[in-house]
Amino acid sequence: MKLKLSSFVFLFIFFSSFGQQFQLSSEAKISVLTIGPGESLNDAFGHNAFRVKDIPLGIDVTYGYGGYDFEAPNFYLKFAQGKLNYLISRDKFSDFYNHYVRYNRTIKEQVLNLSTNEKQKLFNYLENNYKPENKRYLYDFFYDNCATRIRDVAEVAAKNNIEFTQPLNLESKTFRELIHEHVGLNTWGSFGIDIALGSVIDKKASTNEYMFLPKYIHSFFEKAKINSSENLVENSSIIFQKRETKSSSSFLFTPLIVMGILTFIILFITYKDYKNKARSKWLDIILFATTGIVGIVILLLWFATDHTATAQNYNLLWAFPINIIVIAQLLKKQIKNWFKSYLKFLVIMLCLLTLHWVIGVQVFAIGLIPLLIALLMRYLYLLKYYSKN
Image (tube, rainbow, N blue to C red):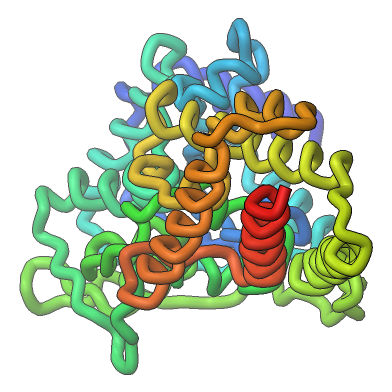
């Protein structure tokens, strides 16, 4: 037993160090693993990995893309700027399996119908990627992530002889709609995503672009052909099925309800101000400061980062950065005349936002609806208040 263990350790170290020169046996199998969604937002979209299994040689390892490089200098700054390099990982399959079983996430396996040469080429490619000088790469959530790399590496190994066809009953969807499949519409995850990401993700995804999501890697690979006529997937199986658990989410703490409560408070205070012919200065300062700060963050995500998905973000129509500057006017007893024009401008901006939403230029978070109504009513009241005073 000790001899076998020692042999395995030696073989694994040899294999790890000299992967490109290491020849797989004729019984080697390479498969694609698809991991189901997890509980956190970070895990909501699932994961993909390759599995290389060669029983005669005692090899059973997984390769996955998209790991965080926590040792990178200025990690959080680079993450925010979209300049963070991600990693390819290599793990023993048993460790990989136990990890996702522990977190109760479904594991599906698709054994690929590749020739011996194609398996060797794919394996060599992965091993070369795993070298210290190659293992880091610039990640893109939509176009270069843990799922798209599986597709791209498989195509390299098959010399681009893979033909992907659209699965039956697949609806044409935008990138944002595909995201909502995993995070829902009325969740804090979708609320943040819909505020941070711009109109560029409201275009229809092509057949190939669907595969930025792991579950579509599974469904597209299942229908794919290789060398024109053969199935790409030799056989499929579920090697771990998620156990059913009770949902812990509460509708009372969803964005729509929370924003609805805040809207009620804003409208109630506005009504009292109207009855008393007064103005709650503190409320206006909070609203202008909050929308201004959010607008500045959106502007930075658009122009000061390398994130492709944060461009052309028309959330700026309600979260206007200049709001943070004009707070000074709210502190004065006598405002400048231009401030009334500015309030009219904010009302027009909200109308433009509605138009953008209706005609499909950009879809906004549904949790914003109550807040947008509150902002509109407050701006209109301020216009009336300042016109009388």
